[in-house]
Amino acid sequence: MKLLTPVPLQRAKNPIDYNSQLVVLGSCFAEHIGDKLNYFKFQTSVNPFGILFHPTAIETLILKATQNQIYAENDVFFFNELWHCFDVHSDLSTISKEKLLQKLNNRLLDTHENIKKATHVCITLGTAWVYRNVKTNRIVSNCHKLPQTEFSKEVLKVDQIVQSLTSILDAIQIINPSVQFIFTISPVRHLKDGFVENQRSKAHLIAAVQEIGNASRFVPFVSYFQSYEIMMDELRDYRFYGTDMVHPTALAVDYIWEKFRSTWISENCYPVMEQITSIHRDLNHRAFNPQSRQHQDFLKTIGQKISYLKEQYPFISFDAKD
Image (cartoon, rainbow, N blue to C red):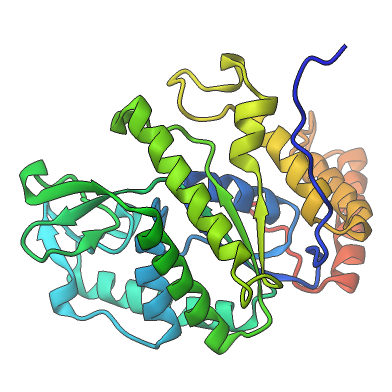
């Protein structure tokens, strides 16, 4: 008896291992995948400019980073007691204009270097709906809660998305010709745009990625992971959505991650991932008596496990924030 319709997946020809360098960009689902990669200590940079929902937002920042552009005073604005930039998420907003500009430009430099040495760039597209600033006629990444009258809303056509994605790939390949691109469509439903509008948006994104993937000059470098399709077809049940009925639950994210792991993570990494899971579990253990000899021996064993891993992979670290 079949209780679901499994999405057929094939193992990647250029899988991720512990020597890989990853850049993960895009919607909030990109952060879910990025968090998993960071948990297992892969060398990963995740959304340095915050969550980016649509292709044009990603294109703007990729072009700035790869072309060594910088942000200046006229690129930021003051609203609601904070300095903001239309190109980035409000998580980067700050009370100081100078600090915001410094943060933006430092992250552009870091992103340039990360892209330059990346083996894989993972891009998750969330929506084709965008907001255009009426005054500047520019599409923004984030409206920062400015009055709605300052923006017009539109959906990107398939050819516009193709143009944007082509621009992203071309800009990255100029400084890193051999990088592998992994595209995926976020399973998060943008129902605030409307039910039909959300479906149209996802369809435009899927069609554009397929067109890019079929372009002869990109074929060896572009792959597609079916996170949206897995959510829609394998997890076709509201128990896999949060209370907002829009975002996948932690269980759904774990399920899609397992599919990603089986497709994109080299099998040689699995024993190391198990060791890392064991160390995380040990570090989260609460001692009844932290001063006891038994607990001190326990901590020593953890230290030995970490030292052994670091001998193989010096970049792996288990600090307080982990």
